[in-house]
Amino acid sequence: MEDFSNQDDYRYEYEEDKPSFTVGQAILKYGLYLGLAIIGFNLLIFLTKMYLSEISSLIYALYITAMVFAVIEFKKKNEGFMSFGQGVGIGTGVATLGAGVIGALFYFVYINAIQPEIGQHIQEYAIEQSRKVLESFNYTEEQIEKSQEASQKFNNPMLQWFVNLLGVALLGVIFALIISAFTKKKRPLFE
Image (cartoon, rainbow, N blue to C red; front, top):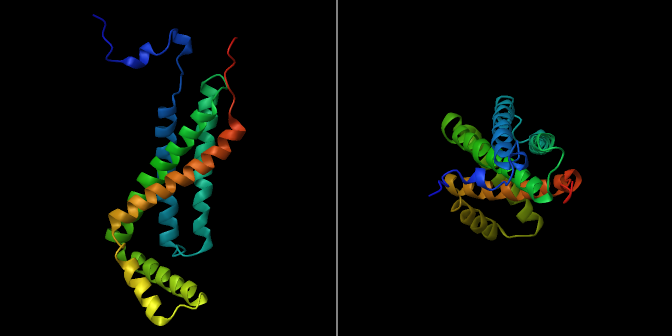
């Protein structure tokens, strides 16, 4: 009886058809790089007290850079070929692992355990901004208070992490669709 414990070896008829760098390897390598970059970026933002400034949106450049480098290495190690689906999978996986898991975990540990005053400051800022938005829609003081009370029910770190994970995955899909549209190159059927 044949041993199929390592099924990866049986998916390819010939050894030269087996990819030298898999989608999973690209996700793991560049997801870890992105996670480390996000940790460094967040530390810099927290230590310089710039976490409420527009500069914090530069984090998206890190997402895109990690995704592009992952796709480039994948193509380079696979004879220049990458399907659209592989590109979307790589980009989404890199963003989800790097930002949604590693980066978000660091962020929530940092603002809840290491420097909780930053978390409080961010929360106060969010409340202030939501108040301004609601006032611009002519909400009464009572409506504003009810809205802010309702939002406090969702102030749960695990729920915030889960919502962040979903948001990062969605953003990763959007970025990956764009990147893959420009970088895909299908392997010809007959060589």
